[in-house]
Image 1 (cartoon, rainbow, N blue to C red):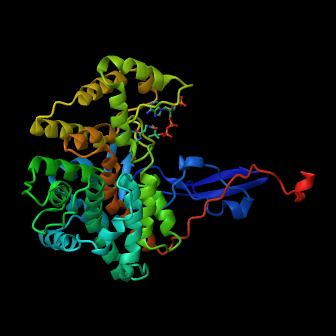
Image 2: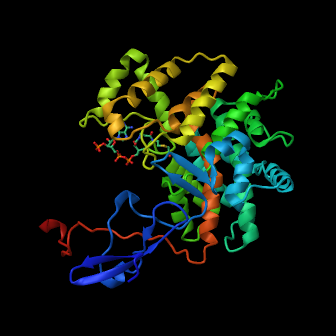
Length: 428
Ligand code: CMC
């Protein structure tokens, strides 16, 4: 046994567990042979101590509040680059040169239109359908419209599917919005950048010209960069697990969108706004702080706490600044922002939140920014899905291209009935 092995005593057996080091972050104990050697599983509901895969894409140090995409700090990418540059970095592992960036932008831009029949597919939804429901269905449906890029064994088809999803998700998201407000779909316009194009598809109407506000476009682009990837979170793990069976990438990303929808994950920014509206005025904050602390009350402060960050979420700092820029540009005075600032201030100085290391997360600010831009709360998680698509795809590709990857198949601790005999109904 080397010093980098751990040993584990199971009954009278001592098992050696090799320790594998990453480039940074915690090492892992390799338990793959544990069941064969001992007949035991490990037990870790919620994966709080389990690394589900090896990855080179994103690194988080939750205690230090650090987030790196391919080694680059998130604040540098958000400050100096644009979203498509981040997409390129996540997909290919390096920042693009001038020519590579121009070529990538061109490829994405030329794939933004969706099959015309998608418009008819949309007509089947109720007008009041939640746009996330529409996204789950329409992204899943892409596999029916783009058969020619579903062969996951072919690297060219994998790249075509990846390009299609990054390019078409904003178009579908804008269509989901337009459908919900009863306005005609707006086709993409190739002379606009990715984010400006998305804003135009959301807010232009055929009867007048729409001029993109560069402050709004930059803010939303930054929102996309900040949400592009976040290592093995619930939706990304869902995409990997779905993809591990060999399912096509459109179906896998649809599964990721379904997971993202939950209020403990991507649905939190929508939940933050609902909570701020319910609080209403700063003087009512203490009531909600008390509710959040009460063990018998299921209420949680939405936008606070994170499974990984036990420090200020580095994305929240950038989002907070962006929120202020957007509100100043649009001249919006939002009473909810006053509640948010006061709530943040109170919670950051409260013993309960300090002790449990509950800091504001990115969702705390993003909702206010998106609301100021004129987007309805039901669209917030949709925008998160647009941004996270590249992360899901990069992680899916990494898994498919790893020769050692296997179908994901967790085990369980069974606590149900032991075997018993079937009784006829009259004898039960
Ligand atoms: N308000 C009040 N108490 C909280 C909160 C909160 N927002 N979050 C955690 N706690 C308490 C919790 O009650 C528990 O206390 P105790 O140890 O006394 O039982 C302790 O802190 C640890 O909580 P946990 O549920 O074990 O922590 P977790 O890592 O499983 O949960 C979380 C992380 C994000 C689900 C949780 O903090 C939460 O529900 N936050 C509110 C929802 C939210 O903002 N979600 C967005 C996450 S960021 C976006 C993303 O990456 O998708």
